[in-house]
Length: 68
Image 1 (cartoon, rainbow, N blue to C red):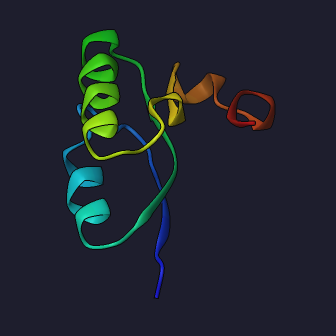
Image 2: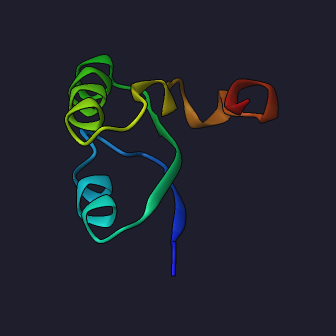
């Protein structure tokens, strides 16, 4: 089974690391803190995933056009 997930208020992406290690597929991630975003992007690259899945904005600004 392939678990697809989104990671909101993701911080540096620790939850994503665990879920991806268990075989999950990250659809996108959202975080407002620029330092946490950079860390999460680096972590995704190390895991062989696309760092552009991390969207840096407030949750209020997250809408369909930003996700695509």
